[in-house]
Length: 417
Ligand code: ATP
Image 1 (tube, protein in one colour):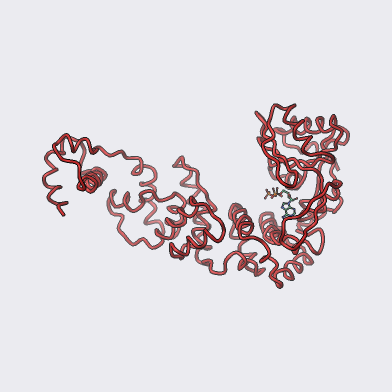
Image 2 (cartoon, protein in one colour; image 1 turned 90 degrees about the horizontal axis):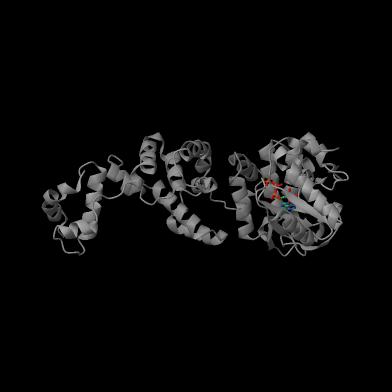
């Protein structure tokens, strides 16, 4: 089977050049994995992984030289990442075809150079274990020693061998993710292997960081509640957490809709998976959130977003004035606000949108210098006074600095300790 005519037009030139550079260096080079799977399914995928039968590092250097790019990193498995300039694909992962051996379950594998067949055999599922040749002779030819094509047609997620989930239990999470993404089925024998691995608690051999990585990928799926429910059904979700909120999962569709609406209104980057996560752990205390973040090695940035979320979940205040809206949402992350609207319903939606699109951009009319100019000595009263003035401004009770001298005596009296 030849897939050359299915290559995305934007990548035609790049793929040909990769093949030619490989040819000149004396190596056979292939595109592999998800790129090939999605090519056959007709799903756009610009995430190109290249496998080189030969020396992947040398090839990566040649590629960078000839295409005016740069090799940006090597990892311990000999994977090189090449940054290309002016191409539709900016980063390209290049690996040397290799064999893997797992020294113990859940460990990272030991690797040695191997053939392309070895390289495909080390992969997670047959549908991800196909390659397309890029050298000029045989350009576009499908290499499919494990009948990935047949499984794609049948809609099956099938492992390469019976020890697969013991070697690497993260594949259990991946199986649910691909199954639900494509509306496939995990093939019955593969499912029984999952159940056996779960029975002996194989996922406990995986680090918490790697589990989180898989969960993050799941939460990045178009409809993440599907793989999550599937993991629950396979009794695997407990290896992430066993105290996730069912109701929170029910908020996912609403979170998705709100994300769609709000992203068109603001410039912020929105980390949608974190808004989903907020729903799953929205009932935690701030302290439990901190422990959660420590457990999975999450960044301070994510921790702050989650803390905002659990605080907002307990919010009971009023949102009847612009200043009340501003003070309730001040510095809260956009993810936590999306979660908040999903949780509390549409009556708070207007307030959140008002905050995001207008209130948070308002600049205070009055600054400390203005107060000094009116003869006030800087002191502890400045903070509360400026805050009060800003609230008045937001609520339309202060429109111009000239109103300040009339207002001050009354406000100072009000704020007197
Ligand atoms: P996605 O569409 O989610 O990006 P992908 O198949 O491209 O899916 P990657 O995580 O980018 O997924 O992995 C690229 C390829 O590497 C996979 O297609 C698969 O062949 C292989 N792979 C990834 N993770 C594993 C794993 N845990 N065990 C074995 N092979 C893996």
